[in-house]
Image (cartoon, rainbow, N blue to C red; front, side):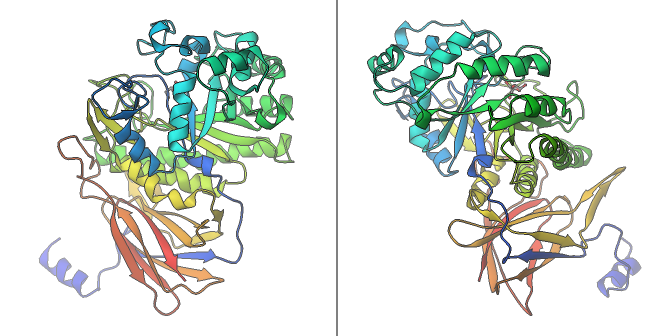
Amino acid sequence: MNLIKHSLAVLGMIAAPAFAAGQVSISIDAGKPGPVINKNVYGQFAEHLGTGVYQGMYVGSKSNIPNTKGWRNDVVGALKELHVPLVRWPGGCFADTYHWRDGIGPQDKRPSNVNGGNVDEINAVGTHEFFDLIDMLGAEAYVNGNVGTGTVQEMSDWVEYLTADGGSPLARLRAQNGREKPFKVALFGIGNEAWGCGGNIKPEYYASLYRNYENFLRAPDQSRPKMIASGGSGFDTSWTDVLSKELKGHTVGISVHQYTIPGGSWEVKGEALGFKEDEWISALANTLKMDQLVKDHVAVLDKNDPEKKIGLMVDEWGTWYDEKGAKSALHQQNSLRDALVAALNFNIFHEHAERVTMTSIAQMVNVLQAMILTDKEKMVLTPTYYAFQMYVPFQDAKTLPLTIKDNTSYTLGAVTIPGVSASAARARDGKLYLALVNTDPSRAVDVAVNVAGTKVKGAAGKVLTSAAMDAHNTFQNPQAIKPSAFSARAAGGKLPIKVPAKAVMVVALEE
Ligand code: AHR
């Protein structure tokens, strides 16, 4: 900017540039609580893939890395801070080659390398070990069964082993293996990606298979898991359509998988770090498509299931980058951009809380958009971890109507996306929380918050931002990016909040 222009700008005499941060107005109605955000929207996914389970989380009880029943104390401790509500296990595509009997009984007698997954599967983590993790986290279990290479008998036996009490032979086998009481399985998935790795079949055929499997998944009424049907991918609603017609009364949810791929294709997915601004905006624009995707699937559900008995379970979502030089399968770094991807998705899921009753990010540790990265005994928390931590109050909170007026827009080349994304809810602790995302990597934005139905004095919470778009934590510098404290005071009935460029913010409003 030359000197004259600079002086005029200082005097406020230059018209605001097209994408300057104006004042964005956010109105929240605290008097009209809407649907509850099911805590399981913050679910996680732990697949036997790369170092996602072995090394990343499970090191075995004889390891020098401090552990409890083989699970790393550092990792479990960090995950507990996220109040992880639900864990999906053992896959993904792995689930459709997994035979549960390989993972029970004495660990040293279990077979190795039998499943054709992406790791040499040693089966040290099986049913009992998974439930040790679930107990330590205080989470619910979402077990995914094998349709691809399994049988109805095998799946039926697994559900009996998991849930039967007393007299059944499989309950006795479970007791012999150290667990008298049935396990509590909240959700049970019948297959995974049946259109691809899980069978390469058509939705009509899968629907018939599902009915057949589900018919034999017998368990005492009080401990019968709720069944999830494996649905389609992305914007293809044909699976949701067929399954919501065919499986009424037999499923509580149909899954859909949608990943954020900044490069725009599976061949060129883009880099996790060192990307330019075009891949910043494309990642966020790609993520924001989740809103339309959910709307499309929900429109089909509304047509076929007006009673709203079937949820839309986005049980795989998150960033997926090129794997060049990855330390292990699907291992990728995680930056500030990933935290924005997570927060934008959360705000979208909240918006559709009535139908989106469970999601699980892919994945928990060392795989894709992970919370945590490990290297031998070292552990680092990612920006995505912090996004999940900041959003904890939204678990089981009641959504509040929120409107954004005069939103900024952020443009690069031919791509324009909204500058601000926001969500508000009344949490179980009684407080009113507001989440804000500023997608613009260069400009802060001034937001004026107005809340009807209550008087707001101020706000206090956390903001996650950094100078670099790809700010990330490493084992050498594990605290390079972490949230910092933020507060604001209300004046004249409005609460002014300045959201820094490229930031995720969650504040509790003081009433
Ligand atoms: O999350 C990684 C893989 O992506 C899962 O195994 C599969 O379901 C999906 O294609």
